[in-house]
Amino acid sequence: MRVGLFIPCYVDQFYPQVGIATLHLLEKYGCEVAYPPNQTCCGQPMANSGFEHLTQGCNDLFIRNFSEFEYIVCPSGSCTLHIKDHLHGSHEGPGDGAEGVRKKIYELVEFLTDVLKVENIDASFPHRVGVHQSCHGQRGLKLSQMTELMAPPFSKPEKLLKMVKGIELIDLGRKDECCGFGGTFCVAEEAVSVKMGKDRVADHLQHGAEYITGADMSCLMHLEGILRRQKSPVQVKHIAEILDSKE
Image 1: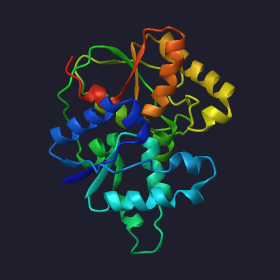
Image 2 (image 1 turned 90 degrees about the vertical axis):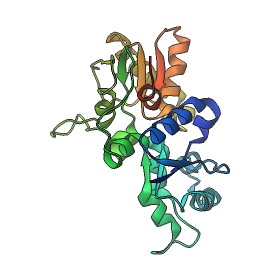
Image 3 (image 1 turned 30 degrees about the vertical axis):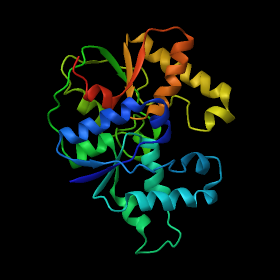
C-alpha cells in the first residue's frame, strides 16, 4: 500500500527521530512510503486559538499534498484528529478532496493495529515504561478506553508495547489523566498547565518509570520540560522509537 507520511511541524523541528522511526516501522511492514516535501502545519494551533477561518491555506495545501495516497499516517493523535474533524476544502461538497483525505488519515498506532493488524514486533527495550494516554488519541481516536466508562478496558498503544522484548509496563494511579499541555492551553493557562504536568510526572515517578511514552510528542515534550527542571533521570520516548528500538 502507498502511504503518505505526515510529520507534524513540532516533530519535524524538535524530534526528527520520531519521524524517522515512523518511516522505519511503516517500511518494515511493507508500506511504500512517500514524504511530500512541501508539507507544512496542519492548522491546528490556529483553530485551537479560535482562528479556524484563517486556516484555509493550510487546508488546501494539505489536500494537494496528500489526496493521491491510499493512506495517510501521522505519529500524532492531535494532528490526526484535527484533520479528521476539521479539514475542509475551498469548495466543500460531496466530491471535495477534503472528504476523501479525512477518511484515509490514521494516527500511527491505529494504523499499525487496525489497518496493518500487526501481531508481532521485532523490537527490544529492557526498561520500566509508563504509558501516557493523550486526550486526543484516547477520547477522539479511541486508542484506549476511558476509565470512567463501565466498559471493558483496552489500549492499542499497550497492545503494541507488550510485543516488545524486555519491556516492563508500569501501572499508574490515574491511567488517563491529562498532562495539561493542551496546545495553546499551556500558554493561556500556564500555571494550571504546569500543575497538571507535575501531577502527571509524579504518578510515573511514584511507580518507578524509567521512561514515559505515548503517541503524542507534544504531550511528551511538556512532560520532558518538567522532568528536566526537576533534574530527573527519567526520559520520554515516542512509542514509534520504542517499537523501532533494538536495545
